[in-house]
Image 1 (cartoon, one colour):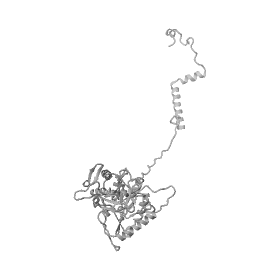
Image 2: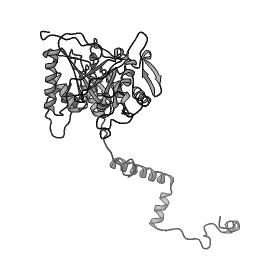
Image 3: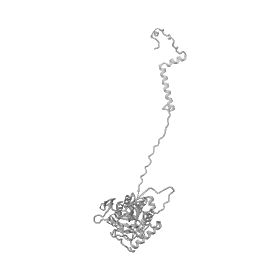
Length: 407
């Protein structure tokens, strides 16, 4: 209270305090007085509430004017999952020339000889064709065979097992039964160029034998893949050529100027490169093979149950001095002596003629992509021509049987 209590008690009723404002008079005073009445005040409050509700219903804005937006959400089914790519499996066929390894669509087209025309910018599919070997296909023995292996100073080396068991016999590809003229093909120089090695392994008929140089970083793995694909394998022995050192067969090559123990150690290094080979093939070596220094080398090769093949690349090389009776053979034809497709085709035709005349012929070739392609094309219809492909080890495991032209 702002007024003292004694002023309230002493001031006469109806007399305003000093300094107080006079209440309003006239029409405004009457309206205010009516509004202060309880019933009138309640009626005014109810009217305001009704008016507010009417505005809400009229304008439809339950958020009291706040901005809002609406959007429709459409539910869609997820896209169907793409099936995982599957390998195309070709059923086994009686064709003995079919390789067993995986081949790309491009390799299959190339091997078939069919020209495929595609729109610009397109390429063969990435599908892989896997040829499943027939159940009766010859299988090579696992390598290394502990019966035929011993530890040497450079690694595992072949040896003759009990009962005169030889690597030449155990690791060789079995010669399938049949009659008629036979041709053995030995492809050399593999294990260094990956594309050429892969093409020879995957595309050539299984009966073709493959020879690997000892220098490739992946030579052991490449030789194992070749054996898995059904090819018997040989190991190449680098030796001194006539024009050495202008032509150099590489490190660890056998040289006529070295003493016997030095050449023996180099031979031991070569023999330990990988397991599973049936024999050795010269890598150059024209001078070494005609020298007396080669006789103890050849004797050691035979003492370890192996054979030796002269690939025929040295023209008019003298016969090997083979007092130890190590199994040896020499290729009669070098397919790529003239490295042109037409020349290779002509030599393959000549090999057919010799096989029909003599019953058997051993030929060799380097492992270029061109040579591989010409052999693949030539070998497609050998059965229809009455020619059988046999592994090169046939030339080392006894004298090939001669057949008459009637056969």
